[in-house]
Structure formats: C-alpha cells, structure tokens
Amino acid sequence: MQNSTNKVRVRFAPSPTGGLHLGGVRTVLYNYLFAKQQGGDFILRIEDTDQTRFVEGAEQYIYDCLKWCGIEPDESPLHGGNYGPYRQSERKEMYRKYAEQLIANGQAYYAFDTTEDLVKMRSDFKSDENPSPQYDSHVRMKMKNSLTLSAEEVATLLSNATPYVIRIKIPENETISFTDLIHHEVSFESSVVDDKVLLKADGMPTYHLAVVVDDYLMKITHAFRGEEWLSSSPVHILLWKYLFGLENMPAWAHLPLILGPSGKLSKRDGAKFGFPVYAMNWTDPRNNDFTEGFKEQGFLPEAFINLLALLGWNGGTEQELFSLDEMISQFSIERIHKSGAKFDYEKAKWFNQEWIKKLPVEKLFPIVKLIMESNGSQINDDNYLKTVITLIKDRCTLMSDFYEQSIYFFQAPNVLDIASIKPKWNIEKTLFFESFSDKLLPLNNWSAIEIENIFKSLAAEKNIKPGELQLPMRIMLVGGKYGPAVFEIANLIGKEETINRMSIALSQINIE
Ligand code: GLU
Image (cartoon, rainbow, N blue to C red; front, side, top):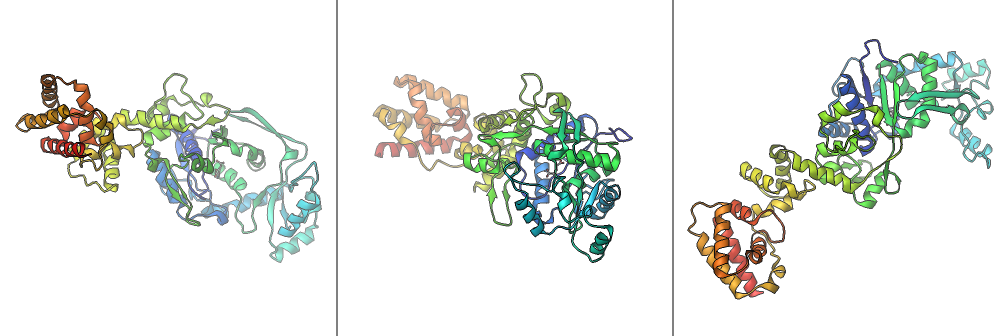
C-alpha cells in the first residue's frame, strides 16, 4: 500500500467554500504530524470541483490559517511541487478518461435524467420503508441511462450534446470492506450505497472521482480525514478497486468527530455558546456573515494546535502541553481515539494561559505590541513594553487580556475604584499617603525594593498595618483591584507618575 519510494505522502484536501473550522485544522495537524514524523511530505490540495460553491478569498484564507498555525505545506497551489496542478479545477481534463474507462468496463454509465426526472423518481419511489429514495440498484433500471437505453439511443443523445452525468454502478449484494487505521475492520453493504455521480454535466468530476484519481496520481500513502467521510468510503474503495486494482491505495484514517455542547460541533454552536469555531476571523463575501476566529479571540497558535492535537489523541502520559516538535515526535495513530472528542472552551483557554506563561517575552512581544497599537496605545519604548509583559503575562488568559492588564503602565487610569477603599478610609490614611509622597520625592535610587522599604517603615512609624494601605495604593496607581506587585508597578511607571497618581486619587477620595 505504499508508493515505490515508500515516502509517506499525506494530503489535506479542503473545498474552499468558507472559513476553516477547528476540526479542519485538526485534520491538517494529524496529517502533518504523521508526515513529519515519518520524514514525509504534506500536500495541500484544493478541491474546488463544485464551482457553484466557490467562494472568493477562501483559498487564501486557508493559506493564512496554516501559516498562523506554523504549518507549511511541502506542496500546494502556492508552494508548487512535482504532482501539480494542486487545484482540482485545473486538473479537469485528467478525470474524464478514468470515468470513461469505468463505462467501458461496465462499472459506470451515462445518465441523461433531467432534474424533473429525478424529482419524479424521488416521489414515485417514496415509501414508508424508503422515505428518501436514492438513484441506486433499485431504481436505476427505471431511469434514463445507458443501462436502459439502446446503444443507438445513447449514441444519438451523446451526439446531440444532451446533458449527461456519469454514475458509478454500485454492485448489488456485495460487502465492501477495508481496514481503517483507527476503526480497524470497516464494512458496508453495497445495497445502502447509491450510484454516485462521478462526472457532472459541466464536465467537472465530483469529489468522489477526483479524490481517488488525485490520491492515486499524487501518490498519497495515508489519508487522515474527518469521520463524516466514512460513509463515502465504500464509493472510494470501489473506485480504487475498479480503476487501480487497489494498488497503492492510501491507508485510511477517519478521525473522531469533534463534539460541542449539543452533538457535532458546528459553526452555530460558536455563536450560541460564545466561543470561536474557526481558526481565524472569516467574513463570508456572499452575505457578510462574520464568524470569529481563535486567533482574533486572543489564542496563541502554539496553544491552538496543542489543544487540537488533544481533541482525539493523547500522548499516553500525563503531559498536556506539547510543542509542535514534541507532537511530531510523540504522535501515534494507535493513540487516536475512536469515539467523539468533546470540545471544552474553558479547557481551551487553560491551554492558552499555560502557553502565555510558557513562551518567552520575545515571542509574545510582537503580538502584544499590535494589540496595544490597535487599541490606540502608541508604543515608543519596546523594552518598556517587554518589561510590562514580563510582569503581567502570568495574569493573562487570552492575548487580548494584555491590553487591560497593561494599559495603566502607559497612562493613568481614567476611573478609580474609590468605592472599594472609601468605607475604611480615615484621616490617618490621607496623612500617610501625603508623607509617603514627600518621602518618595527626594529618592534617588528608584526601585521596587526601596519604595517598599519606605512604605513599610512609614506604616510602622504611623502604626498602620501595611496590608490596609496596599489596596488603596493599588487603586491609586491601577484604578482597580488587579495587577502585579504594587511596588513593581510604581517602580515601572516612575517617580513623578506615582506621586501624581497618588495625589489625584487623594483629592478624589477626599471629595467623594
Ligand atoms: N474535499 C473534502 C473536504 O472538503 C476532502 C475529504 C477527504 O479528505 O477526502 O473535506
């Protein structure tokens, strides 16, 4: 089941019809991890045979998402390669001969049925046992196709350019079996499979024909794809058998479904439960329908791929945080689960928080800088921002938290939570902060420890517990009850700013 060089070749084969669902990225990831572990190639093939579903910008969006995730294809329409073109619409001419070969061998047939014929068939054959009849072995002999028409009639129709499709002729009473790397022995009774269209009236192949022909021509060795494709696999297996005698058929691995709060995780779940479902923001150009992405929601790509890897796979140990390289070395098909994997947004955020803690400041810096700037905060001193990031990174769950957690390092808070300190306020505290400011003013070696020393000895001198003064000082500098050590904040914002903020706060406390 391998190509002649035995090099592992896997593919991700999206249809560019919209945003990239997190399940799609997980499919990319498992393909990629396996290929890289085996020293193989990861191919991105664009399956755009359904021209009616073409969406402007969707292909570029897929490249952008993969780039953000740190996954670079070895071959693709963009990257090139020896097995191109990698866009199925550009391979149109390659598929017809395979469809015709099937007809010549009696494994497919021309079907001339019109849309009305098909509608009629669905109503004529509808019964209690069969509420949605398909074009299959039970009805095919009652339809208008090259199995029911004479050779002459077929020739005439073809020469008159009558529109037709080519359908696979699914055998009757056969069991179609194959070995899936995850589900092991899988079999389908042919009676439940319909005569799928292989070549459409516009001359384009359908996905079923194109996927088999392309996997063959591109020498794909392993195909990881979502479990929703399992029901199509008997058609693919038959095509592999008819066209290529099953030689070099890829090993199939149908990945478990990703479940949301109510069944299969859908785009609608995201909107309903308030979490992203797409990798990156996506606006459908046809109706301006906007769907939020993990990236813009404030996820790090490291966290995103890590949490996806664990949706359906485990490393066999307690380890939960994996870098891409660790995933590549530890990935194994044996540890992919069979049953659906539940997506838990709280857990997803936990991964992000851990990755924020784990990544060095240098890695976080460009992202935080962009966030600050897009919120209207001009960053003039990169090193200052890096110090701020060091101080607050353990307090951020999403990258977007960096703005709120750091803005007071750049500007005095607009609103102070005076209400939190007012009930326990007294004249002694006002006097404390006044003399504290007086003592800070001449301080030459401005540092967190010096500020703290002065604060504590003055508190002792005035017989006030330092604990009772720290919250007020925090609110004076930050605005609210959050942030890292208050003396670190004072140190960073500087002497003048610290004294200023305390004086503004004091006047507010004493007025309110
Ligand atoms: N074009 C299919 C999709 O959109 C590919 C399925 C497969 O990998 O065979 O997911």
